[in-house]
Amino acid sequence: LLSAVLDQRGWLLPAALLQIGLGIWLWRAAAPVTDTSTQQAQQQIEQLELTRYRQLVQFANDIFSWHAADGSVLYISPNCRRLLGHEPAELLGQNLFRLIHPDDLANVHLARADLLAEGSPVPVTFRIANREGVWVWLEMFARLFQLGEGQTRIVGVCRDISLRRDAEALLRESERFKALFELARDGLLLVDAKGRVVEVNREAARELGYHRMHLIGMPLTNLLAPGNEGSQVQRWSDYFQVIQSGQSDLQELSMLCADDHEKWLEALFSPITQEGRPLVLLAVRDISARRSGARQLQESLAALRVLHNRLYGIIEGSSDLIASVDNSFHLIAFNRAFKQTFEQHFRTPVELGVNLLSFVAHDPEQMAQSFLSWQRALSGEVFINIEPLMLAGATREFEVKYSPIRDEVGDVVGAAYIARDVSARLQAERELKLTLEKLDQARQDTENANQQLKLANRELMRQANQDGMTGIANRRYFDEYLAHEWRRAVRQHEPMALIFADVDFFKKYNDHYGHQQGDTCLREVAQALHSQLRRPADLLARYGGEEFVVLLPGTTLAGAMFIADAMRAAVEALKLPHAASEAAPHVTLSLGVASIVPSEAMAEGFLIYGADQALYIAKKSGRNRTHGNPL
Image (cartoon, rainbow, N blue to C red; front, side, top):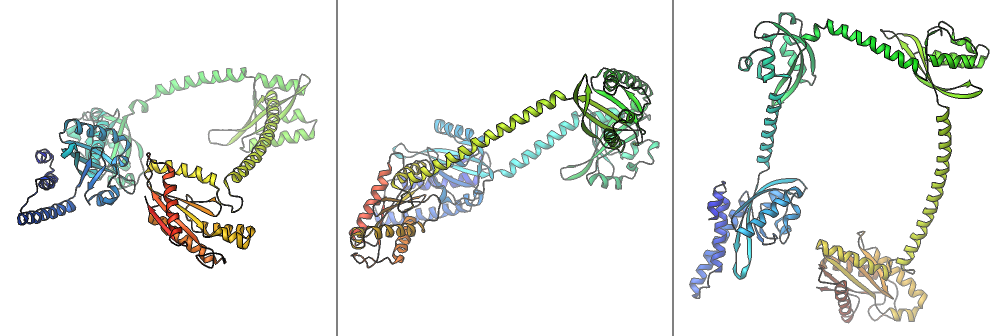
């Protein structure tokens, strides 16, 4: 049945391999043969079939896998190394859902639910991350099998379909281009390197009056009217190379329609590549009306006059001071606000033709400043000044913008003056600046106080978590860190190792050398132990008295034993004299090591107990040694 289902999709080899594997399994499940010779022959045949099956699976292009009902991998073929970059051993016992693209996970769960509910073969496609994090498209066919004692197994065959998905995407993109090409409101033509029309949309055919089949294959130059002899398009071979270099070109061309009348079209030539073939996309739009637009020009002039009148009304009614001078500083235009303000300030009539510098002739310093401002504008510069004017007995501040006035060829023929009373704004800005300065000072004071508080809290935290004598972590911090790392290891299913280290015969050391020398000894031992830790997550703490503890997250028993041996050797290398020791003439350590993969059913005390028991055995075995306790 499985073979029939898979063969419909061209999966003949995977189906055969599955049948062979299932047949071997059923053979193994049969009742045992009691006859010795028959049993040996059966085992030889079975072993031969298994060898052939493994060879077929190993060299097949697809991935074969065997799963528990919850999706965890019980077996996966070696081809996962080529397709995904993962070693088969890395995936055993793992659930592949964590590698599947989040957008595809719902479909995979749904297919699995259907398979478990109905039992019929289920196909599903999804993306899965390879070792480098690149998404690979796979198509999987799965089948459900019931083993003895109610056990359910899922057998699956996965095939890499990334190339097929890419081809499907290219096909969709091509179809989308064809749809946009056909539905465009402008006329569109595709022209090849020889200047022949290879495709045309409905709008271009309508614009030129041809049936589209008549245009396909026609040289583009046949569509040009006699008035285009000087156009680059006539030299198509060279022009095609220019366009293909990435330079789009906009031209106005006179083109011949099917009824031989000429029509002016705006033509945009752009490079395009279709299925690897360089082409030119020609977009055309009728501009005949624009070229014969004398009427539109008259309408534009009339609209311009209306705009001029509106602008004049706006300028004349504006509260801003607006004026302009010629190159000799004579007034050539001004509005009502300018006239009223200057007459009130300077007590002099404002009229056309008057020299503005004469208003400040009585004040040489102000005259020099005014001259420099107007001269900068007449030199082509645009700038803004803040200038005071006396109005109604009070000084008002004006924001004045000077700018050049240019003629149609760009030469400066005068300068414009636009001034606005900004006294209230500037006063508000000054008050705001003062307020912001006060706020900034208050903020700095607050930040300084917060910084001092942080430093004080940090020192308190250090004192609370650090052993005062050795400078390493204390028992309190170790307990908190162990609880945190235990929860993390439970979530991530990672191993964790613990080392208990005890200074051999330390009480006798204190009795012989004194407590002060004993404290010095413990500090040197702590430094030697800490020197063997390489990872930031590893923690060394003083557990109590002469006993130290080392927590190694993500570490197996073998790795922890290696570190423990290195620690014991590092302490022994100190050669600290210990005349009262029964283990050696110098200070030595006994170490107990335990490692476990935590689960929610366990508590941290299980690991501590295991390491403590290992330390007990190390001491009982003669001290100055390391003992590991596999949990």
